[in-house]
Image 1: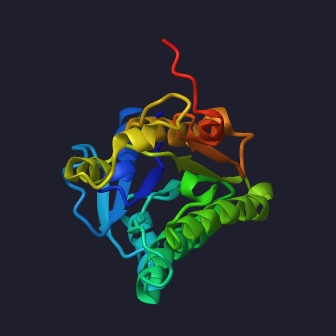
Image 2 (image 1 turned 180 degrees about the horizontal axis):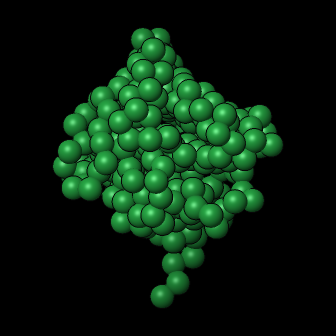
Length: 254
């Protein structure tokens, strides 16, 4: 997919964002990474890097101008910038921490959609994929992260309808438990038990970052031109299998 336009990936220096950068470059996208961390080692063919705090409205608007001047118009946007949250009960989860997670994971995603999506609307062309999470689709003890991701899913549908007649598509991908560097480090430290993460998934395994990137690439592609406003779970069947625990779990067929 060779193109003269730019694909922007926020949070592209690590994790799922970095996997999206690598895969999109491999299939022909010209990718600019926007992150606070250095993204030079993600892929040798990254078109450019913009340092930006996605929660800062002025910085995001300035980044739009810089990218358009240096690299060209952004016709594809992947909002992957986000932070995780430690499991804490409400009496231990400070409002500072709660607001920090909501600011990055929801406000930052909305700001980038509003700024870069509005520029797409003027050109009557573009596609956005927001990285949400299955945490935003089920009850869990992450009382900041899960509501933030639920808000991203809701926002995605709203923007899809807002901009649908302009030719701009907006979708979300909700990864399940994905073997990112952060999750693998938590497993290696003994903070997370991989069997707990995998046991309820219909496929009985973790998701690999590349698999999320493939879903993102599809939603950006010409093959998805009639798809907007959806939330695509890429979760190895965790949503399908999780309720089976009350029946003894998903069958382990040999």
